[in-house]
Length: 468
Image 1 (cartoon, rainbow, N blue to C red):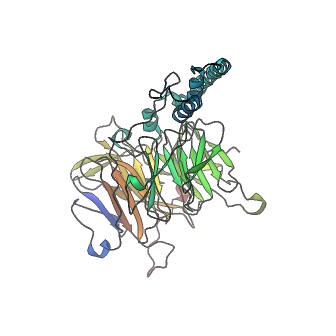
Image 2: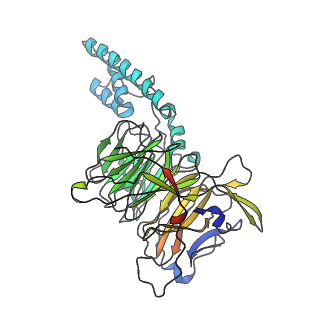
């Protein structure tokens, strides 16, 4: 089993990670450039700046709250439409119950009774799913893949799988799709849906034709057709919402985590799913191997990485998820102390987010330190991986930003031909692109290299039962 104790020490304070070469991360000063031989191999990626001030947090209206700026000289149907857009069904019923137009006594009475039923159901739902009583900001902080939600504007980030296009979920609960050649708000498409906020996760389909969005408040995932700005709901009952999405690179499956101790894996042909109860807590994050045969995931409150394998069904069995019933622990990221020339450094703890590069040979993990522990820090750990013929997970090194900067979000570029390209969003506001130069195992090599030791023989089996 891989652990942080096998990693090389982190870079010295003041240095930043520049690139990877010969299976080692190279660090240097922030002002240093890549070697001339590498500069032409890294694309010119745009830097998107989204200031916090122009964006207004939408938030969720409480059941007793009333939209403050609806002009009551407007017609009833216009006020109802505005109330539905701002607060959903409860807002619509409140507007009808308080309508002052004559001859609508029956409508006001019926709406008042229906509103009372909605409030009772809402209180019952809140007792079953305590996260629904959180404010919008607290809910984002709990479920976002961003480490420090208060310090950033972007809730979620997703590269388009084929073009230099990306989607972001912002502070005002809007989803914007940008063309990276012209990253301005004037050319962005804005997607929104009543009751679907706060948005905490986005996932592009590998074909690039569909975009999934998820909210802890909405039990349905939304499947967007970005070209028409329309969506279809994928509804289920139970779980209390959707907190995190991950579409497998082969397009066959979707991981959907919930606020409770259960996650689902959907197959993307018939859109059926299997339910996977976890052992101790909710699924925090997850990522897929390129062929969709393996899912790596973590559980809130634990410092280990789990692995689930999936079978491919054909013929009459086609349309089934095919997940194994046993999860293997493949990495232990418990806190480790590194003795360096500059003193002790402590790294380790819970895994907050995790991404696997398109070649399946690099895994990047954001590890949250212990806030109470002196010297503990949030860090990005990079593993070298291989999924076949046996699963291998080996240490590569730690990624460090400028002094005082903490990693917030990580993402791999979908089309980097020279290995892998990791994008890191830092708490300082800087976005760095770190190239990992290596020859993929799928390509022919000039000379064989030493094969790493597989970890298959040292994994621990953990019972994890699937339910249809």
